Length: 266
Ligand SMILES: [Zn+2]
Image (cartoon, rainbow, N blue to C red; front, side, top):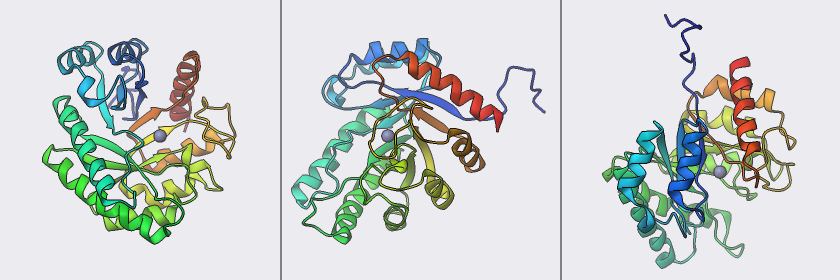
C-alpha cells in the first residue's frame, strides 16, 4: 500500500497546458515544462504550430528534458460538419497531417472539435455530416495507433442529447468534456459528466460567466468548482488541461494550485 507520506500521489489525475499556436512551439514547451506541468496539450494549428512547422527531434528532446507527456489537439477550425463533401474531405486530410506528427511524438489520444453546418441545414444533417467525417478520421487514426476524443464546443447544438447521438454513431470515438463550453447555452457540465462519463478520456477546464466562452482562470467566473470537481472525481481520474487564456500566465499557475487543492480535498 502506498503511504501518503511517500510523496507519491494517491490519484492519477494529470495537469497539462496547451501551447499557443501563434508562438514559438519550443519556447511554449519550455514554459510548460519549467512550470511543473505533467503534459503538453499539443495544439497543431496555424501558423507556428502547424504540422509542417514542428521540429520533431527538438520537440522530443525538450519533452524528455521536462519529463512531459503529450496529448494531441487537431485545429479547432477543421470543417468536419461542412455541407460540402470536398471541404469535409479536406478536414480528413488535415487531420492525417496531424497524426503523422503525433505518432512520432508517441501521442495516443487526439482531440477533434465538434463542427456544425450553417443554419440553413438541419440538426439531423449536421449530425450526419460529422458522423460521416468522424468515422473516416477515427479509422485513419487507428492506423497510427491513435484514439480520437470528441470535444463539444460552445454552440447550442452541443447538448448532451446530440453529443450522445454522435458518440453512439461512431463506436470507437471517445469524449472530451470542455467544462467551460459545457457551462454555456444554458447547459450544465455536471450533466455531461454524469451521463457520458463512460466514453470520457480528456478534460479541458476553464471558467466563464455562463454566457461567453471566456477561458478564465478557476474562480474568475461563475462555475462552482468545489461541487464540479467533486462530481468529476467520482467518474474520472485522468488528464486535465487548464485551457486558460489570460495574458498574464501567473493566473494559470494559480489555477493549477487551486485544482490540485480541490482534487486533494474531495
Ligand atoms: Zn477546449
